[in-house]
Image (cartoon, rainbow over all chains, first blue to last red; front, side, top):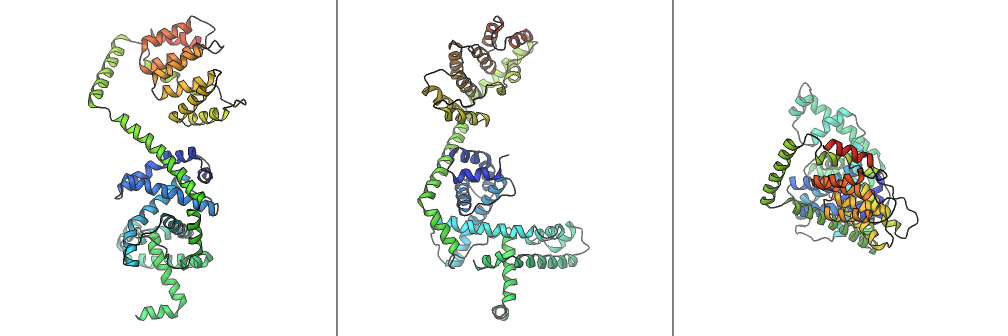
Length: 187
Length: 250
């Protein structure tokens, strides 16, 4: 496996050959995911290109480290971009009342900051106990309390309710303690 | 209304409500936490300006070009996979003939076995740059070859061979093997023949690789003929190996 920054540097240095490798190594999985989630080949191609531009602009702004493999990281960025795309129509109607056409540069800039914010929240989730993570993961995925109780072997749903409350409080406290949250909440 | 008023007066509570709302969006699976782009946001403006710059327009083109190359390759692979049914039928028939041929006529090795046992490209000489004019093409060709990107490797070695007046046995070997991997047998045989005709010390390598082409093609007759040439010349490349294979094939 290549060093995680190899591909990021390749994007920054306009290295066509390495970028071609990124396509070879990563595009098939992204395409599979998008096609399985109401998209088509053309959507996958568009999302993939936007993801590469997003990574390039973020790395150009400030070099960052990837803790997983580059392939896994790019896949997550693409997944989030697709999730964003699927929710975009709702967002446009809710906020503006009319669909507003944005230029591509602004779209990528917006998605870059949103991705950074998403990563901030994921990073905070990693700081709570494994047990809390398991409970909150199910809670945020809207699993019913009684089902969480069965799956994680709690006596009843009241115990789960109390654990959710405690874990959420802990997570909230961790998020609020980070100065970056004050910047992020403004946007 | 009551809660809204309380939130307005209590920044701490507002913070908690805000975090809770964000957590649902960030950790949930349904929505997406969009940035309110109508608020002043210097970071957003800076990124947008950078993305609109000439530098990034160029980067976008480079990414697009790589994508085009990739999709073009994928498309051609797709086309070659969609052969008409007749070809499938012929392929099956050929496979059956080969299968029964092997079953009844051969107690020894099959062409495929010989090929897979001997197609060890680690044995190819290294292409360490020796200050040639087109050394970059060679080293980039070797990179593509190592990554098993044979179309790219073929393009690079072919460009190198075409632009160099002197015959480079090593470049021809890499070119021929790339073509062999791409099942472009005619070109592979032509390039290995150039090695044989080269009048160099390494010319006999051409016979060995030609034999491998024939084995991969399933052309056992020509493969044996080529191995026999190697077997009758003790100084030729892979002389002992050729004799060994010929014995095993009998």
